[in-house]
Length: 303
Ligand code: SF4
Ligand code: SF4
Image: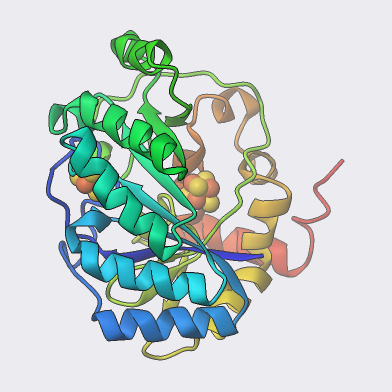
């Protein structure tokens, strides 16, 4: 199943201290609406079955969004919108917007929530949005971005007190969050395999990973190419057949790091995307791993 994070625009109406999208160039780019429609048609023909509208704040171009979601419905593409809920100022206003999205066939709303988002958006907005989804019969969940510190306990408590559906998401230390202080962590020695859904940026560059992938600028390891020069089908095929991407999906970052000679004791001190950056955004290491993947030595490093 082909799915993609669709960055129609990187423009946002707030400025979160942890924003991963910060640092992308251009800072507030936007696709042409007609171009975005043509791309979605091409995606449907290439077998894309799920589109997540993300990057900046998609509600900033609400009418465009309605049109694009409607087109996805026509093409039988599952749609999700990731939003900061700044628009959900009152229950009545919220329900009105959600009914329009539901009418156009939106499949799911993903509500972003964290102590950084809530410096700019009252948490009641998230409650309005969640309750509005329930009232209009729209599927939703809350993405609770956290660094797992005690400061986040009251934020999690608010979601529990209001019986909202939420999933904790580890903070990704990329973009603006790069400068945030990182606490030392020790994780279990887990595989860290990634689904690797691609990300399409407003300048039509496509990346093989929609999380921190567009920030690996030393090697551009995840950059697949630009739709001005390639078709959607070509870029998806590249994402699906690159041997190293395949190892990330099948073996996981941890096994690759161990193969690369990083001691286990050190591996458990890394967050997933940070370890990924160490492996793939360093030219010499990348060269070694590419060679190992091409000869299948890396793929043989399995139980
Ligand atoms: S994290 Fe989301 S809501 Fe916050 S500034 Fe970035 S794009 Fe906007
Ligand atoms: S570990 Fe790498 S592949 Fe996985 S989400 Fe992070 S940047 Fe993407």
